[in-house]
Amino acid sequence: MGNNKETVNDRVKMARKTLEMTQQSFAKSIRLKHGQISAIELNRCSVTEQNILLICTPNRIKPGKTVSEDWLRTGKGEMFTNSANGIRLFDDNGEELPPDEAELIGVYRELMPENQEYVLKNAKLVFVTQERIEQKLVYDENFGKSRIQPPSSVHGKKRA
Image (cartoon, rainbow, N blue to C red):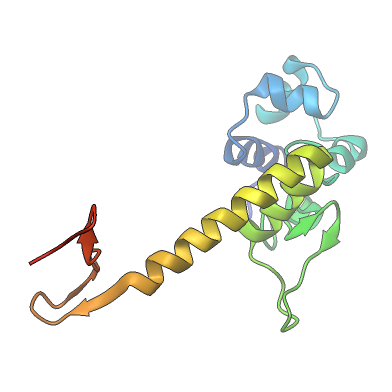
């Protein structure tokens, strides 16, 4: 939004809704009562320094999502930082990772080791499958679009 009439309280509500959380679950994540979040969102009470610090603590509210302190205080910049556990992430070219990639890494880092192993194994399988599909894509001049090339045989019989 970013208009001049927007308050910190309004941005708390925007962050909660963007995170698709209820007032109750949001309040619990920052150690408040449901009524306190309701009062903040209705501008009936102020957002304390403690509230801001808790809301902006990496992965406190949702794994992989960190509310930007600058955005929460001023409305400037992006709602979420591209960080995982408070660490800014960059690609090989020195560019900051897009929020979705940073979120994925943040979520991964919060998993137990056995679940990290499971996620990594399955991500590699998806990647291999994607490569195989890409190798089978051919340009069909008759239809002017890409399609999957059919296998040359089915159950050992050659196609005509």
